Length: 366
Length: 238
Image 1 (cartoon, rainbow over the protein chains, first blue to last red):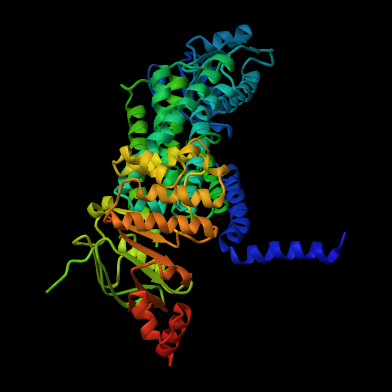
Image 2: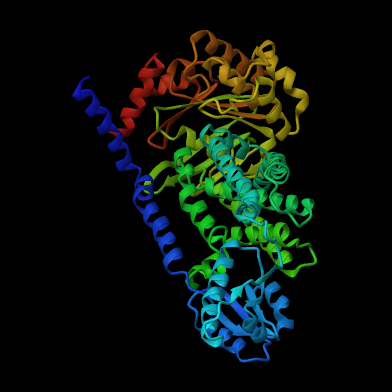
């Protein structure tokens, strides 16, 4: 071991980084961006889940519980009519509604209450605060029935999913699409960069090929690969992992295909801004990670701080993830306006990227 | 009387930022001619070749190829371009590479002939990544001429190949020129210059001298092309 020779290697490494400003920036900026985003997402998360309360109790105890619910810090409550509840769950303005039945006071006096809890059900994390709030509100009953023990047996129904619906079902739906998006993005950006660094792109540009033909040819080639991959992922997710699926398999496949096409074109477009494979891989923490954090996969967009919601609303992955979940969790089909919007946004993004990729193709040659 | 040239470069300048790569270069190449572009590394040879095939656009002056003002996509199918490094797809076989470049030029029927010309027909199934440098260079040449272009642009085609192969390359070039193909060959190796019909000496982005090898010798006042070049380069600087 020679300290001198080892020092030569160390020095050479650091000298190289000194000239590669992009890598330096990544090294020091990316962790702040990612951690900052994560912190803002978790600490700044604004809203407690929106819960509707329908108090149908003819006695006095219903309003005692309803009052307690209104004061709960776990949820944000609004009074609704029980008949509007399901519609409000569907349009996403409520995550749950609680019905206190007409004989609620009698039930309480008989020592056994059974309020109805209707959960939207697609986001497992949002159920817990609702049940917690209800349990705490029940404590207030104790005074109303003079210290008698009241057992609490909520009657829970789910609009989507069900009691067996678990975290994997919720994340799985989004990840089926995300895995395809991410891997296709990486292989496209690297192979398009190879085309550039091995000099074949220059040859292509000096041939009768038009720029659009190169971009579309690439897109088709990688889409073929991506579709085979998407099919494999889907079969694994549905047959082996048995991820909850309400929707049409063809529709899921179609959404995956759209995401793959978007990923291919994002890869081509971004490869214009990288000089080496090394720099290309650096786009992953900068482009992919924030998109994943903001797309609603882990943190529902509705619970994000408002400024981040604006950001989420312009990122295509948000729509793709939402679309996948609508299909798999809620059984959406193309008659759903929300799915049409999701698919439309992803498609529009594909078109935008094809145009952007084509126009930037020339610029970085000279 | 105005002669028609296959390539006509008129008073062309091209800068990259503050760096003037080409400064008022004028040269003309006749049909069926082997035109040697000679000069040291960094003189502007590659820039000139890229301008001729329309990969770059001149800031001043005009480039005309086969009667069309460049850049012009329509002319590109009549141009073959061999880049400095052997630009090939390493994961494809020799034949797959040549067939690809044939296909994008709409000339699949030329594949066998091109492979035979560069004597790679027997190795056509070999994956490019496993080939020696010389074979890659030959494969790269096959890709450039598979569509039988009227104009062949060769950017330092003989760099890094052994003397035997170099002789072979020049034999290909001569037979193609005899068949009517126009060729622009860049090189910084002076002993290759003698094989060209006409030469353009280029340094610091300017054309120092142009003419047949004999004329260049006369202008430089030396029987040795290398000395003649150095004399011409020195004269310009003083």
